[in-house]
Length: 434
Image (tube, rainbow, N blue to C red; front, side, top):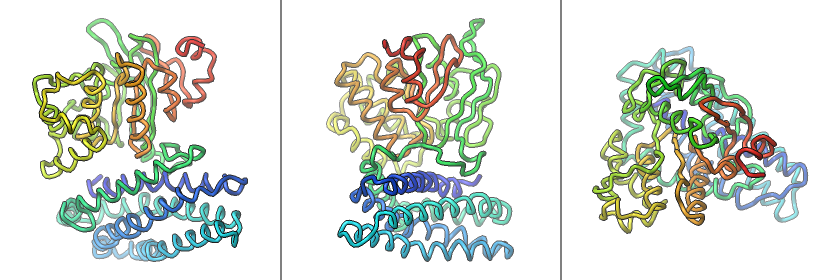
């Protein structure tokens, strides 16, 4: 798939999660739940300022415009989709008015609930048609020159629509939406129905084996991770959690099995090329470069990315970890254990991961620092990042995760929802001390 389509698809992932959240909130409101006005207003702002003003224009003015010129058979479909783009601001405005009427005692909560669910259904249908119909047509019809022109527009850092300022504003808006999302509906990686089976799974592992010499470390590992999902790997020390993450990142060779990332077979792909694909790891034991400055450590994490975006990415990491900015000129080896863990996570984020692998981020930290690290993981989850979290701290990991896998001696012995595994008697006895 062309990189321009990946950009649109990544935006679709956030929109899909928003649609799921709206649907669930509509159900809650219809059942007598709270209206959550602060969350809804932040969400309406995001839909207006990013989706309607930027995302739709990105499609209309570039992808759809090129496809109209290259394939006349696509025009009726594009007409219908662009009509929905034009109608979208009015639909959001109508939802705003329904919320205002409810807050002033002039409207029915049931009507707002119906409006939210109707908007969610329309958004899902729209995304499905774009990804299942428009994307394949574009890949067949557009020339290399077309894709270059589209990609150049999408990559313009000064463009008011796609540039750094617009991207920063959209991230800030989405972060505000995520931070205000009520716990009952969340804004994480729940599936909420299938977008398309081959697109829903970001990572697919089937019967993966790996060995250290003659010692087999992983046996027939099979798991899947959806886009935007947080998956926990729990197990005792030596169970194979670190080996599995190393096999996913390409540091540890896989002897057999299948490994697919974003639909591509990557089992024989080198580790550095997996980083370029978007698999970034914060390793066990942090493994920072002690003599180098904190800022140099971070810049090394972004070596696969264009230099033009390094400064803005650094500022995002510093905003998440202010202590790193304060000490950015100091050698990384002078940091405390907790600060080095922040640096390791920040270094991985500099690679702009599509899949972030976190290996024992709480290992060896004091209780207060453990809580701080897990708060960082919660923030990343709320921002919609896809995470695999390997942890001996099973309760905290499973409480945070959408799903989890239990490893014992290199094999997966249990899997299920995070809360489901917490309630499992076998897991409680073996890993939770209950």
